[in-house]
Length: 303
Image: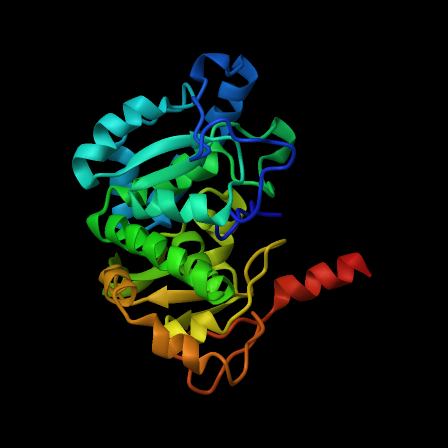
């Protein structure tokens, strides 16, 4: 089963009380154990071997430009020395899930909140709460790209407003199907010449060994062209692989959609249907209609 981070850091971290109003904490890098560094090493080595063939160029370039290595969990200060001059972003440590308004405020001010803990060795492929591997390895390479850097800041601003007007559910679907589980078309050299391929840019996929392969190679899920209102009407899976992935024509599309006036869309969303993850509509641009084989196999296994 894959890692499943939250679409946004909704809710309070269980049993934790903030000592700072913005919920930030010291990373506590010296407190990591050899076993925790070894877990990072396992996760890092298998993803860096896999992603150059599956992730978009921008992710791979960002990954290689950052001071990341297999030997140890990275220090946020060292990452920020590279990240902040590039796009103005910085990583701040938090103890886990934080309230909505704290999360959105950090994003709106180009601070990416990262859990400072790492999963245990028996949770390599499944984790309910985002950890330092998901947050740093999954997200930070794309924050090196100016379009994603601008998009996530604008998303933070939109999130603060959506919270005030009660539209977080619809807006969270945009984050889920882009920042966390987005695919993008990319020109690659194939056997017959240059061709379109689908590549990973979403952090929830990029930080998961099993979903990295599933998202672009499995016959099971649908892969559908991104349409903003369609995405905002589409529910998602939080406990397993996605049944549908939405595909951008270009990463530049993120900036265009972030600058859209959401108010008319929110108004239209008051009526009409919401869609299940497995739905395919007549109006969809379908890159691949999935055969649902994974979902059927899971159902049989549970029967």
